[in-house]
Image 1 (cartoon, rainbow, N blue to C red):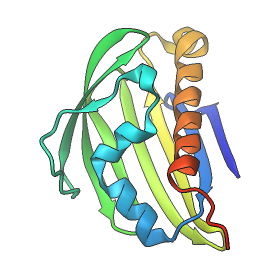
Image 2 (image 1 turned 90 degrees about the horizontal axis):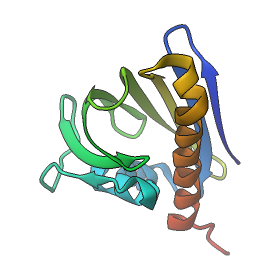
Image 3 (image 1 turned 180 degrees about the vertical axis):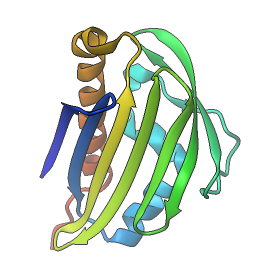
Image 4 (image 1 turned 90 degrees about the vertical axis):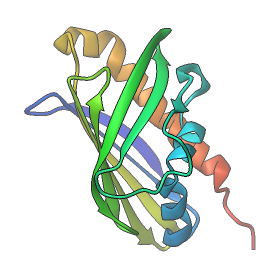
Length: 160
């Protein structure tokens, strides 16, 4: 099961995505706790690269710097880990980047099939509803669908 939805929110937009990863919570959370793995979950056309020197020890208050391209435009992005509860959730918020605001909550729940990975992203777009409808909405949906597909490839269902 995987899905990606975007809806208008009181302040900007809310993107929700969820999928089941057929692995235990410890393994899935450890994968997401390594910021470098974000490169594996981002489509090649974004040219996403972590700039913060490695290894990166995830923790509350950590600042992580990236570079990427959106529709060919080179961008720098900095996020801060604003909540950190191992094995349960963490939040990264844009401190510098292309959105007027971006808050990404990652949640992890054990389930009978493995681990449910839930992403809630609240964000605002420069240029408002028109730019969102013409460009941003599709890009975000594509990026998160790619992410879900990548998780299925990285963590394939184990055969008995």
